[in-house]
Image 1 (spheres, one colour):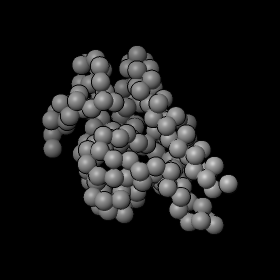
Image 2: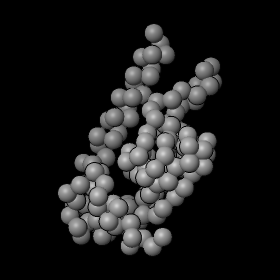
Image 3: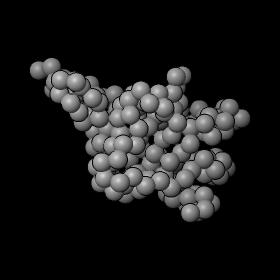
Image 4: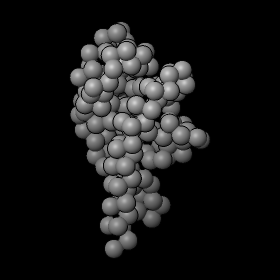
Length: 152
C-alpha cells in the first residue's frame, strides 16, 4: 500500500486528533502497514526498540517474562490502541514483550525516521511527546497493577 493512502487513516485515529495537517503529512512518511500472525512476537524485552504501532485490527498482549511464572500479561490491546514507546529513549531497547494473540494488522511508525523528523522540527517532537506520555503512563500503571497481584 502506498504510504500516501495511510494519511487519511492516521488523520482519523484518536492518537493524531487535532494534529496540524502539515505534521501529519510529515509523519506519514515514516508509516507502513504491517501484519503479524497469531502468537508472533512483535518485539521482546531487551530487544531493539525501533517502532511504535497502531493496531488496525487484532489483539496484542503486552507481557513480561518471569522465570518462576513464565509469562505475565500486563495488558491486552485491541483495535485502535497504540503501543511501543521505548524507541523514544536512550538505549532504545524494549521494556516489555509484545505478541500478537490473533492475526493483527497495524501501522508501524519507524522510530529512526520519526526521531529525524523531530530533530528537524522540535515543535512536532514536543507535540508527539505530549501524545505519548499518557500511553507510557497507562502501560506503567498496568504493570504496577500486575505486580500488586503477583506479590499479594
